[in-house]
Length: 343
Image (tube, rainbow, N blue to C red; front, top):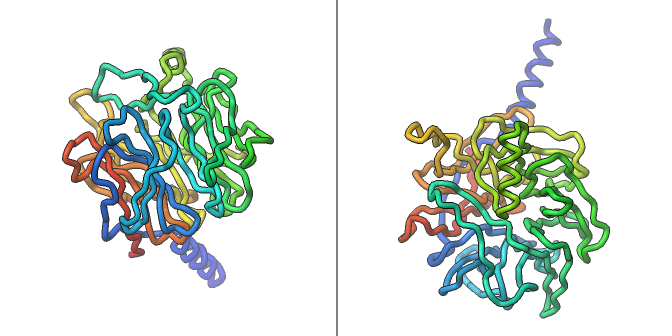
């Protein structure tokens, strides 16, 4: 009996040790004009790169700013639309997706007539690498190639691509070679991040199962956009094996990334915004953190507006995210950074 109690105590303490309880403090706004999103840290967590539609542009360009709000600068390339920029391991390169190969103008995109529906376009992006005025196009596959993030120790990137008639995750070298397909299930796989150790990945996905859902997915691909269907968060081995579903609530769960401990995932969801008036989940996305083993949830933001794209700094002391809070125009999104405090 005594040994059993000791064993039970050890299990209890292990569970407590593996469950973080945190809150966000000293929330600071970093952008103050335009529509901004997806701020990602550089190698030493001193600055972030993000995309923004401002200064009369009809599509996103890239900008860099220190995490204290100083040294704001424009990315030197401006032709076409930009998205999903990410620093390399040593800040030698910046990876990003763009339509610059199609010309200077912003491409036309599909606009859904329903203003309540949250969608994001699947422009004809290719992935590029930039360093010291040297620009290299890494992909050359008509369609959507974007959402690039980097491996924590190897010169590898993971990205999302619309090729082979479906959207899946792929991995390639820094020079665009040795492309490996990671996911194969029919439907949407996107927004992947490597774990801090680099041996696992997390991403968002929707796998249509009924004929109605499959028709909706085919329609989305035809019109080149993704809509806020019931997306869920998955983790797996780096090669896509041993896939585990973390959410299953009927809501749109997306923008997942890792806590530095490798045991928790931070993501955005509208799970707490069920709208009885139109029998669907609303547009109020909040930020949550989930324990991979226990599935215990912690809600990190509490607003009546959009909060998403959460990313921890490598030491876990900061969190960047995008939000519609305090915006002069309620539909404008800005970049925020907060201190992460352990309770």
